[in-house]
Length: 121
Image (cartoon, rainbow, N blue to C red; front, top):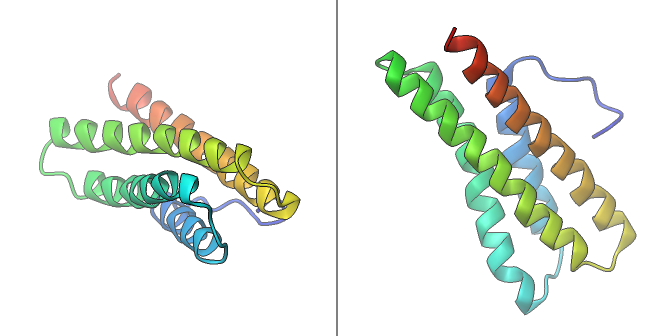
């Protein structure tokens, strides 16, 4: 992920994040202890994208704020699940991929926080 150009279309960026999470998850034989974390990160990563798209199609300003807050919350939640998966994985290549995804979820959460801050002024 570090070698890629940043995506400035946030709708596409959130979609790509959810897609990368799915591709990472689908390629690995996970342990029983990791299954719950996997389910959670799959849901949360998709929710980041879905709620951002819904915010762009909001019917009102409060609806916009609500959807951006949910997107931010879900991006923050992804950090937890990605961190747990990274800590419970032994493959170094997988750990690096999970760190990259963690970094992206962190950046998305910060972007959503900035949108909220700037939109409420």
